[in-house]
Image (cartoon, rainbow, N blue to C red; front, side, top):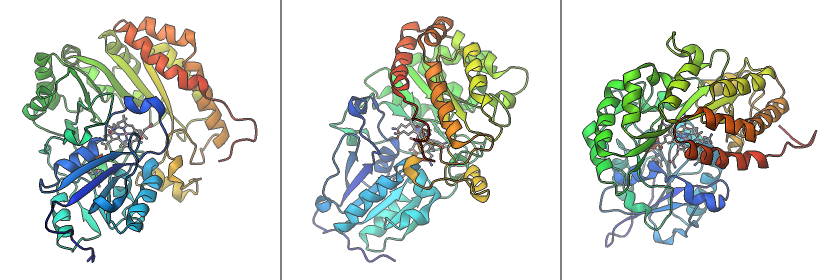
Length: 441
Ligand code: B12
């Protein structure tokens, strides 16, 4: 039992929600998407509370004097900054609650910096937590049950808390949660359920209809994961004439009718995880047999959809030849926009557990868990070889001949495709390989 005081009874209690920033973004801060996590937390906060959102990429962290309670969200790479912010408010006597992926997987660590932690989804526990707070009996852990249904019923996010901020768009929607695949490098399945849970198509379409503009970004892991659930959403969007993008698995393209519907429903672009072109993590191998991942990529491209593919370097079967193999794959199948990431064993995953047991975790500095630093000992390379190979591959994939060949092979939306590649070329060109011996792991 916590001994925190409840706020004065003659005014609404005030909740400050914070999205921590790990570095300054410059002009790019206006091209981000707002945190849906905190809009959903606000949506399940009872209406007698005043809610303020601070997105640290745009706003300064205010003093605690006007707030009764502070809620901070954190992915792993944000955790260190989240703890600093929490310390600042607690120093001013304002209690702090934390939630999101990092506090969910490491609640004890988070509790060293916060008064209470939400494990998993906020919807089932938030109003009890706030009631407890007001009654001066805040507990330390609020654990949401691991969802077992195959549908979700959550209120629409509270977009009005974004007032005064500028984003690429605030028209973001989440249609589904959970994932049956349970990959060793991911924490979604153990906390958000091992099935695709969808909101009803009617509710999703009503939310989209309420938008003033045509562009919709889905924040799902795999919007097309369950085709039977996705189809009514796609049919509804086709009628609304929206333009949309999402993350998904490439498997959907095995069904030609579904692919046609996706294109007809206004899909502009899809982000898919290819992960690796070799070995166990190759979705090439996992794809259901007859159709190779490369062929599926081609089908999506030929449907005029921009395809961003994420490829990861550093799996245990990756030696130094992986960089060349991956570049050849990219050249052959020409995804519109290839992205390369360094494998990152996030805490709470089976991968982290394995590397920890094998003594291969090099850092617990969560700032470094950003897909751009090597935080573990690779099996068949040195950390430096992995790092340099990743840098070189990024540069090689964004030379002019590579970009032009990709744009040429992608029949739809050539201009958008080129623009998207140029946006990526800039940061890739600026990458500088550190001098020999100048890099520490
Ligand atoms: C959409 C998404 C993105 C979007 C984010 C858009 C945005 N601004 O929100 C984009 C594409 C930009 C993105 C980028 C990245 N992402 Co991302 N992303 C996701 C995804 C698919 C959904 C997140 C989401 O919005 N969910 C909807 C909200 C409503 O759910 P939620 O965040 O879980 O929040 C609920 C609870 O956690 C809880 N909660 C959350 N915060 C708080 C706070 C309080 C106070 C309380 C009480 C409760 C609470 O309540 C919410 C409602 O139930 C998740 C996977 C997943 N399924 O979670 C990965 C995920 C969060 N991303 C991840 C990563 C690693 C990244 C990147 C670092 C990747 C990279 N290569 O750079 C970047 C970081 C970008 C950044 N801004 O710093 C990892 C995080 C792992 C970890 N341990 O940190 C995840 C889990 C993917 C994975 N499978 O591992 N991502």
